[in-house]
Length: 156
Image 1 (tube, rainbow, N blue to C red):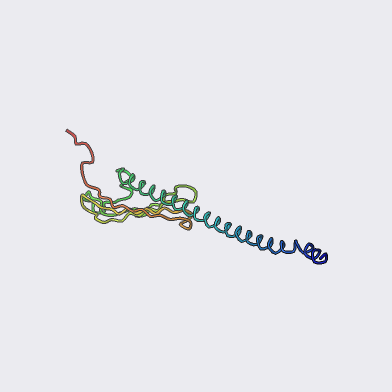
Image 2: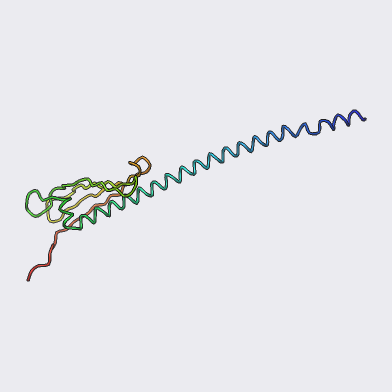
């Protein structure tokens, strides 16, 4: 009986090594997959941040175009009266580029839908770009109608 019990005792730790190696390999695989998921989540967050900045730049570009069209002095730089009849019939500056910050800009395009009459219509399209549109881009457009009216208070 003694030789059998000695043989069992000398091999008692032999089964621990393969089990420990299998558990260690499983833990390493779980760590690898969790790291990969972390990197994917980081990239998703970066893309979402860039798209929000691009949308804010596009919206700011639209606001800039509206403010320039509402100011009579700046409106003369954007729209032109080529026929001399007192109505804007051409767009003299169809593209405006405005830098909003480091690597962020807005490109505003003006397109005439109805020009030459007392009521004009313009399509204003603003594109916000982050890092020359490689990291993020957003486009906002709006159709504007400018109605003729009294420009100054009449003299009595």
